[in-house]
Amino acid sequence: MSEKKVAIVACTGMGKTLGTVARQVAYKVVEELRPEKTVLICIPSMAANVGEYKNQVKNYPSIILDGCVERCATKVISDNNGMIKGRLFLPQLVKKYGLKPGPRTDIGPEGEELVTKIAQEVAEQVDRLLP
Amino acid sequence: MLEEQKKVAIAVCTGMDQPLATVARYAGYHVLEKLRPDKTVLLCTPALLGGVQEDVDFIKNNPALVIDGCEEKCCEKIVKNANGKIRAIINVKDVLNEHREFQPESRVKLGPNGMKLAETVGEIAAKKVDEILEADKA
Image 1 (tube, rainbow over the protein chains, first blue to last red):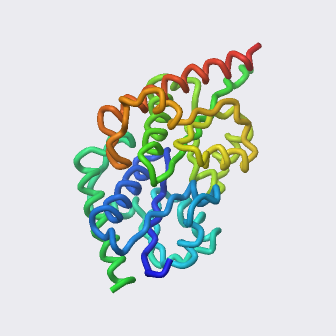
Image 2 (cartoon, each protein chain N blue to C red):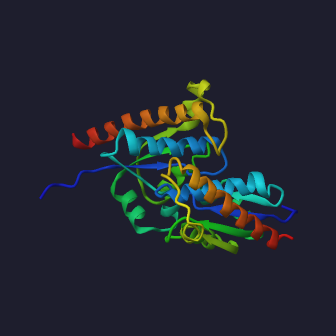
Image 3 (cartoon, one colour):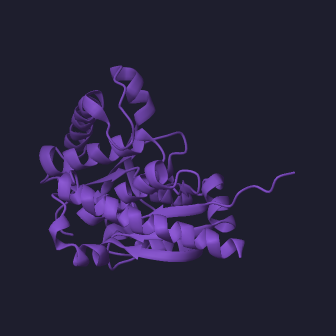
């Protein structure tokens, strides 16, 4: 882990549409917008002690995408002594952009547009953390 | 007073890394929303890890069916750590080994074949839900 990266942590929740949106945002940032500057954290793997995720959240600044008021992603990263440097609360961003995603299995065109806008915000945060 | 009907908690791998995790996710939705909506609830693994009481209680009080994505078996480990009563385990990788034609496209988009794999896993899960609830009645 020599090169500094930003850890992207998405709520991977099953219950709500915004869990799906958070997940899609994370993929967009890591695969398309900032692949060279980011790593994707897998919460279940981290909890099961699989892979390098625990070390990554300790050593890299993290940006958290929480899908609901429970803020499970934030709690899990805090419990693992993660270095949280940015937090996005998706219900707030739904209001900000006025875009309503479809159901959790298919977020639809407005959901896709929401993903694009939130991913852009995340990418800007990544650039501020790693200029 | 009527006894509350027992339901099966469907716990799926909610991993981010592999397409098979996305398959597990859609298999969970398929069971809950289409195949056995009256007999199942979908457990939210991150909520369980985040200590959300509803999920913590549910996994303690109901039989669980785990759908893991790969050989790491993260979901099974998480449910065991939460003292869940696991009654059946399905591994998506095993199902893919028997249906090589259902290779998912990517972790972001499963594509038609990946969705078929999710539906196949869902069908296997639905049968196991019936078996669990039948066994509990006996």
